[in-house]
Length: 336
Image 1 (cartoon, rainbow, N blue to C red):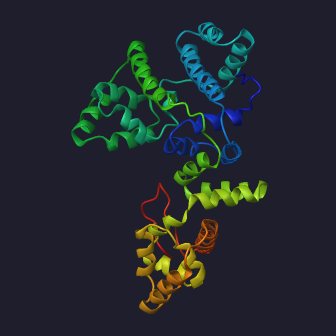
Image 2: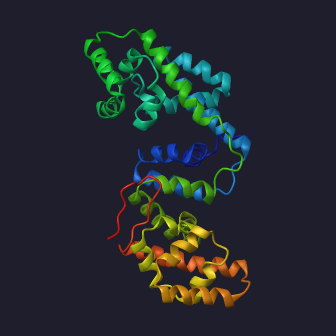
Image 3: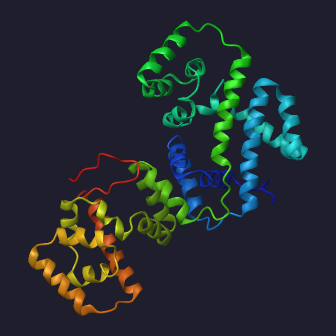
């Protein structure tokens, strides 16, 4: 499967869809708003990624990472030789030109856009000297987050080693970089033939910060209203109502008519029904149970339509600032 004519945005989308959602959203946070919008739109419009194409993009990304290391350690010609073993000479030259134009490499440059929590997971069991060398070459703000998250006894030892560090041999830097590259490669080994589409975009947006989420959805809505609506619906399904606090649910219930609510609750998990009834008055709860009892069997599409109407009300209330829907990366949401 050839990918030479594939746009950079398409390749970025395929790469992000190949990563776990949390890691992909962490990468998005380091991109510009325009870049995020383009990539998110590409993910949403990609219904399926051919397995061979995905493998080719990941291979190119991996080879570019290796070539980047070769440029720094062995020079341009060493990198060219490596790329020509993986691609034809014209393609190798194209990649090499792009790499040399983009990179001003320093040791551990690959980690500059990696979330500190992920770096911590990579290194916390390593020798204190290894950690010290890594932190000494990292961005100070990023390194401070990693250092502060280490166990107390390890913090002091690593800080001491950084303070007394004089020169670090190129061999040690190469060894540590090889270790980090090996850990990073594990993120790309699971090739997913059915990645992409709305099911690929939803978990990424759910882990993104709220401003990025709204910006992306607004852009999608301008380009493709139906697609944006489907993405919004997938991001908050009816069963997620249990995540709302009682005051928020009460605000929602005041705007939902009894017939719609009775239909929406048909066949839902017990915890959802209990959450709803808990936030109704005794009289309202009795009326709702009566409506559900006399309703009899209900077509699945009617239940889904009723649930969409409830979700629409929830989104309206969120847009108005009346309620706050908790997202995957938030722990301190509150109700206005």
